[in-house]
Amino acid sequence: MNSKKNKRVDVVYSTNPNYKYTEESEGATETLNKQAQNLKVYLDRLGGGKLLSRVAGFVGKTEDLEALAKLLKQKCGVGGNAKEGQILIQGDKRDKLIEILLKEGYKAKKAGG
Image (cartoon, rainbow, N blue to C red; front, side):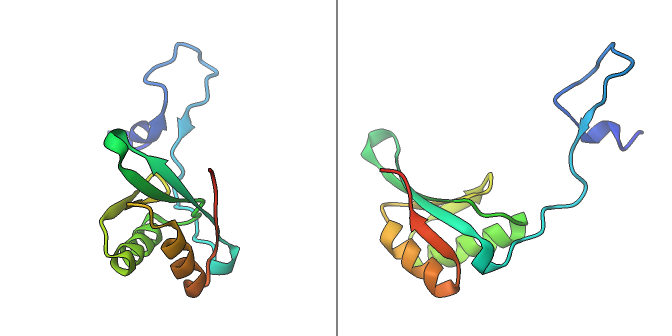
């Protein structure tokens, strides 16, 4: 079994002999230090009028993102998760999230409306 075949992205088969397959990157992106992170905290509305605070802009490994999400969920006392490079926290917790992030040494600010 060809290990390169499993890492191809976007194309199953091409008849073009000169086509270059896009492949997943081998190594994960290194996590930037806290001062270099430029995090933005958004407020989103879900169906049914529910609110969701979203932290975007994290650059780094998935494990580090999940660790930060766990810390934020514990400090806010609410549920949430980390996926696709963003941290999702239930409810309007923007002010508290920014306070926690700044205390932890991250650069963070409100974004959106």
